[in-house]
Image (cartoon, rainbow, N blue to C red; front, side, top):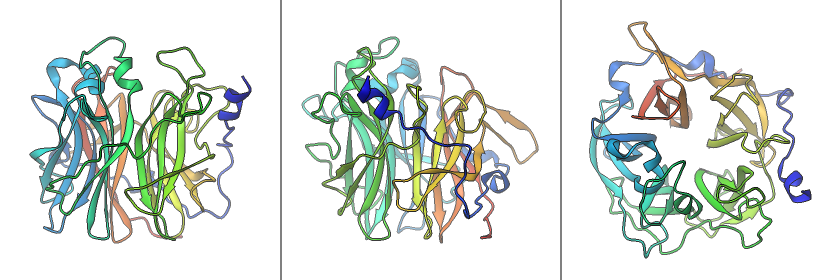
Length: 357
């Protein structure tokens, strides 16, 4: 029990950072055009990480798997695909599968999922979760696939590839059975550090609770001098709530020239007070000491169309930003209308530039 309590850091969500730059997504979020929803008649689409290529076009890396298999097939059949557009708000055209299944002899041979793409020093780094297993869709989940999740990166000179994958993950589980990441690791969020190298926040699952699901579920931090690693793990455990098995996950991480920021999925109103899912904004000076921002709420699930209609959703998660000239211009999210996440799609929400105060 001692190890479990040490994992559950108490986050003082009621106390914002003093003197903070008042970034306010509630004032930045705009209505979306009809083209800014990327969906498929054949595939569930989940997440989506954008980057602008040297060709001047926007490239979106996203997870997909066949509708017919249901949402639970994300853990067994997901593949990271690639779409292009002349605008960050679509329409998007599927171009290719960036990271297909490559066989169960590889650590990421069955499934690739939840990409984050960065352009660093002229190269493209595609961070992702991969696993391998028997490929069978199971209820409530194929735990063998889930518990085989590891974190990798693929590297290319162009968003069109070819992508060079590695024989080993860049973040593996810890060998200490009491560690917070002893069961599986996944869902990397990565940004460049001002002093050089990269900072990663990734999802962790411990072995302290009953298997096969395990838990608690949280996030941990790692750093590397080179974007492809090797990575060093750190002791910080952000976005945890004492006594909660699974409070938050899947941050999007960036540095705005002054401080680190993260948009985090709040699973049940622990931070925003909104029951169900919402997105919350946190910040940190060094990347380890995370605190809630003064304007904590980014958004509840849903958006407004340009014609004034409101689109109510049950889930909006896997946040990613498109940042140009230092300013966030679009918020990309995975979205679904039902709690079972059936027929998921990606939405791209325009953001009005926020003046510094």
